[in-house]
Length: 569
Image (cartoon, rainbow, N blue to C red):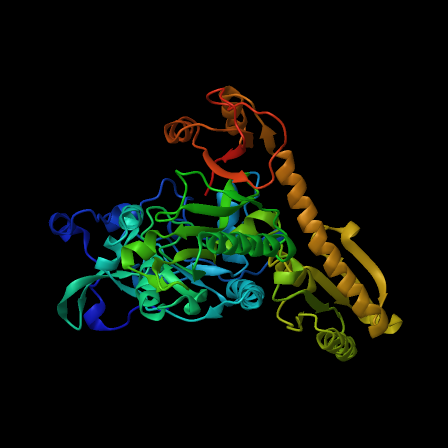
């Protein structure tokens, strides 16, 4: 998954100054110049284009390392851009003041990610990657429970594969990265750096599937993909990102449809139960359907700035790819049939969704079930003779919680003050904090603070250190926080969805930054008109639909479904 490190492949991405001549030979494919790819609309519009800050949360006297200075709009950042900047006397930007700046500050200061040397890429740091690992751990179990096996496909795909499915190549052409040189020689055929794997999967399925006995074939891979994005935002949209992509082949359309629906249900349950994000599952419009799919199902999440995030998708591919690649099987009567297929994916974009759904002015706020540290213990002492007994008690509490399966960290460093540690771990979103001082040691008790309830209201004194009391108390509070985050996010979402019955009402709702929900049977042209005039798109036709007669908000014609419109990432 890492960068190509050999000298011979260092020039494999096509430079912009020779792109024009290549376009004539290549036909439909067009790759934007590197300068335009990394152009940004404002100084704060991308992680990779803004000056970063040193941590100074709530007047702390020390700082943690943050992102380095922004670099010119070139392919590779200059070496000097990795040098540290002087400390700036400011903390996290308030969400209400500048949501994008707040988001970038949280990623920086919570040590979730940093920029990569190629503009538009990011390095996911350990604390950020731990969130992705938690997502992987849950989904891996669910994938295997539903009959899928993990495997891996190459990241280099022959360009001719992409060309085989017309709508697929049309949809992905602007985002493709191509390899043209390997081993110091011009390649006979251009290679595409994996943007998604439907084409190469079908190439292999054609070799593996011969009979109905070979079906269903259900696989998943955890991989990196490359899409040459025009505007980047860490975790949400980057040149390269991590994801899982499932691919299945079936004997009938009905089986494929059940599979596509089953996987969007897996994603929905994960979002609610693990990430505490109240997504809305539904079907995409024709305009928003995945290139090469018959139907696309989605889970749509409302972020803290009320923009929509497409957090996961599941596609019923019909027979589009199997016909393009000749993926056939002999049915029970010996007749040759094309397979019916699905694909489905969730990516590291979900990490960004967690940040933007739950975070506050103090920083990150992690749902306990996805937190790599659920409880942090901060020992407190003033006198040298108090240190040992406080640390011994803290170690004892740590061992008790660890043995109970709770993810706990003891911050026993003496380079920082307890107040600095409180703010630091609060900024990193740890759900619970335990404080232990000399008086607590004497009383065999601890002080516990909740991340989701700031200040004194979230602090409880005198909880016994005894494992029979402490362990169930901690587990109960973690469950409460998990539920509280979901309830808060649900209330926020519901209060920002407006039911509309006319186009004017839709435009008014969108102008206020809200989601609009209304009956819809408009044409593709009508949908594009809404996007052009309001900036909003149809996020989905929700699975849960209101009963009763309805009239399209645009045309006035009878409508069977309501659609949700919103501006999105």
